[in-house]
Length: 234
Image 1 (cartoon, one colour):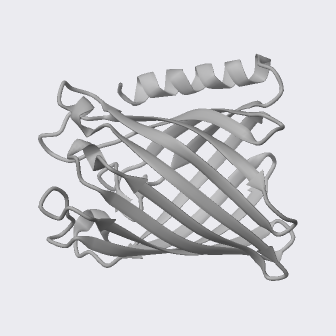
Image 2 (cartoon, rainbow, N blue to C red; image 1 turned 90 degrees about the vertical axis):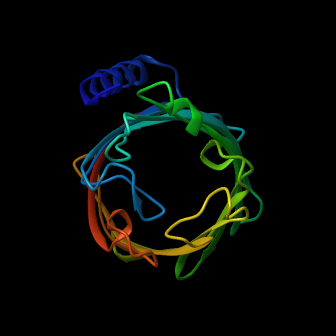
């Protein structure tokens, strides 16, 4: 699916969200780059992304998300299309838990489907006087379809600097538990740091982020990423 077809699909999501029942929402995002844990998935080029979500009052949710991708010369994979289902729990007044499973799929040529993989996640939230702290974990037993065990651990904190203006700082570490099956830059793990400014205006959500990784490759170098998103329904 090229960007034109993705744009048509995104338009369809908006129409569906605007006519669907309560709890259904659609989000469209335009970004200067699509980075996944600090690594560009679009060859350092812009991305058009869309999601369709349903959230129940009980806390469970399900959804789908898509973006154009570009894995470099010789690769015809051009679409990532993900699915997820989970449950959100408000454990106490200050502690929350979000747990679920996601399935990543890739499309563009016959070999693209080889990259598909499942992932389970748990996200802990801690509200405090200084903002919101997160401890997040992701684990896959078949990372990018190569049967490698892989996990990501993240700590993040979001705080408000003025009404409607937030800063989010995060640090995460990606680790392959099977280096012979999957590694990055000849290493079994790497670090990623990101700081983002977030605000909203006229129904649009704006994010300006600076990020970098411990890898010395072009797709994971320090960069500035800007995105604008609009959510419909809900």
